Image 1 (cartoon, helix red, strand yellow):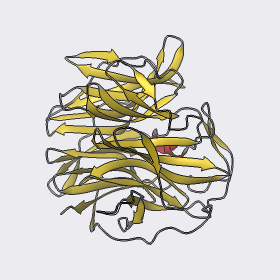
Image 2: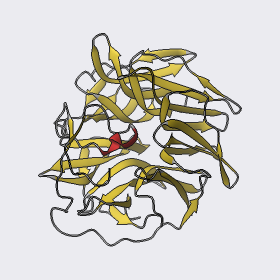
Image 3: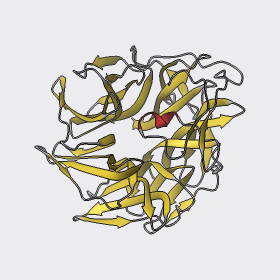
Image 4: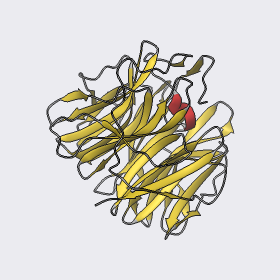
Length: 375
């Protein structure tokens, strides 16, 4: 899919495999068109090298890594094998170990590591009926995976978060009554609670960050919303017309929140970033390149944004953006990515003195993970 020559329409989400490639063209449809990948003006900022990357072998061919997450000294990655069989990999010493759940017909797209014996992964199950998916949630207790009863019969989940109190949050979309809409569920004490009030005009929840039970942010398709413990309120500053789509959101604290995604205007796509200072959201300058970004994490109080840069022929190379330490200007600059043949970085996360990135090349199914030791 790195060379787009025909129109492509996707009507659901950004994060289901290479549906990440979809571009927001309206609030109801995501349209790929054969457009130029040339930056609108200017040139990219010079690449600098704040990170020294170490590539790791994932140990088997045919994989595309969708997400990597680390906590409590444990690291996990999830994805698919040749776009068909789900895969979960656990970092064991210096190697990735296959620890895939025994659940047929499903896809895993996101993983959250609360502890070495408390790992959650989400996606969807398409085995029951062609054209219909059911949301999937699985849990690792340190020894085995268990499938958690789903809160909805029809839908798909795209992100999972475990908050400081141990409550599990998931987002994506689900059929509620006769409507298919963005949803957020909480799972605690073996019970699901739905929080979809305020999300009726959104078609998918892409990324979620939780600061407290009454303080959470949700990147939507389209839009950006805040949770007050009861319902969601759309952020007025962020355009909800589909011209910008956010695929990642992360927070330093309640007064320092970052969101990233893409803008589609005039036949071109560019990375976007927004910042919340505790009172309002404002757009942050990004390099003037053709690119899509898929995830953002926080490293030493700074955002690290990952994705792919596109050339005139739609060929992709890994993209890493961050802010300059100590700079008063909050703009994002392009920095050196891992030296790899992976064309896209789908995920980033930091823990235990390491910044992890992961992704791959969907055209030849070459999965990839790398880390940088942090000061």
